[in-house]
Image (cartoon, rainbow, N blue to C red; front, side, top):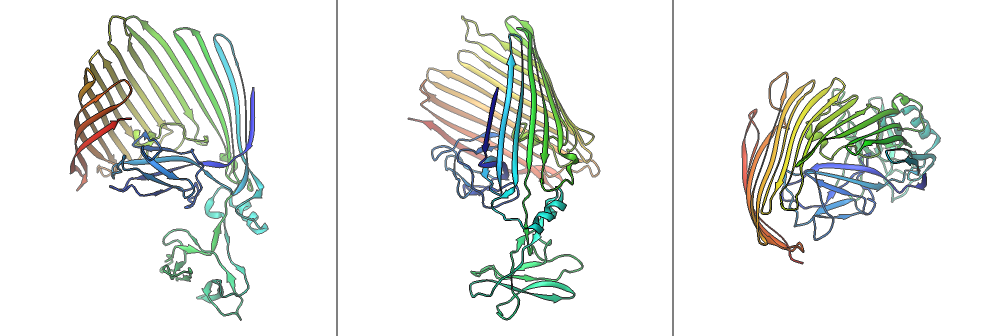
Length: 503
């Protein structure tokens, strides 16, 4: 048995963006509510580019300013516009005192084991930190339910005149009471905080963006459409709670068979002040894995199957799948509802013999992903790797066919490499290509995510068993993108590279 409890320092967040060609610049990390200035907890970040995990450090891939919440890529990792950057991190969220507890118990014997765990992350709603809630603001949260757009409160309050303050008076424009900048000490003046809410969603604009003080001005709507991007309101942050209980087990009836399962129940309350919108707080998830040895000879053959079901209201603390799961399946915003994922296949493993350096591994895999009635996709995967004393052959191939209510897609990817070793040297060649075509069902036109590229390369290197090495290479890449509704060549590139580790 185990148990732990603590006051937590931060919460999980994720930022996704596309790199800017040739720009290593500081990229800003944001909070879950869009906060521009966040304090990232040291060492909590995981940085992925095109699905690959990077390493922190001036002599590696990136550096990060935890206090400013900014990441900068080093000259050793050049950023291009084709790079998909995803960053997961914990940041200091001090809106409320947050209490975290964790408890669990396990029991096992020779053939089976069971365990149960409970995780709870709970804001203490009566102990706000960065915001001091008035009774009126607390009542706004009570009536807002889980809708952040309703969690806003008037920001204006009566204040005394001072030369060092930017104050406003109330005035009426076409029957609408608005705030107008004033330095008349004889007027009833208000201290007003303006919050950006999006272009053409607010009725105030920033009048003097270049000035030391920021003054906002009311602009009348045109044909009922707001002309500004600010409102005299403040965004309230509601206290939240997430609890996850899991039960898992493993059973091995023989050395050749294994079955394990896991079931999870989540309770996610996005506003502890309100009982409204609580019908979607609870969700269920379960998973089962089966593995069976079919043959033990020169090749070991294993069959495997995995099924996972996630109810639409289930909430996890962090992501469940790989960082590029959505792109791998061409998932769009229409993929909603209960989710099921089936994975099955065969592993062929060539045993290494004492009198031979040959090793091999082949995996054939089929996957089916479905979201209720909104998405269905099938993926076929064939991966292989074979090595001899001097040769390495490897290949990864994936074919996806998906269907949604608005679009259908076909996505083919393949990566292969051949390498020859002699003494402490090696030479080799590589080939990569992707062809992703998504079509709108009604117009039969390709969508904006459709793209295609092909790349081949050659390389040569020298190194030893201490990992001291140098490698030179050349890559030739052709990129196709949507032009006049068709996939057409947009650019080609040639890259010469040098990789080394001399110390």
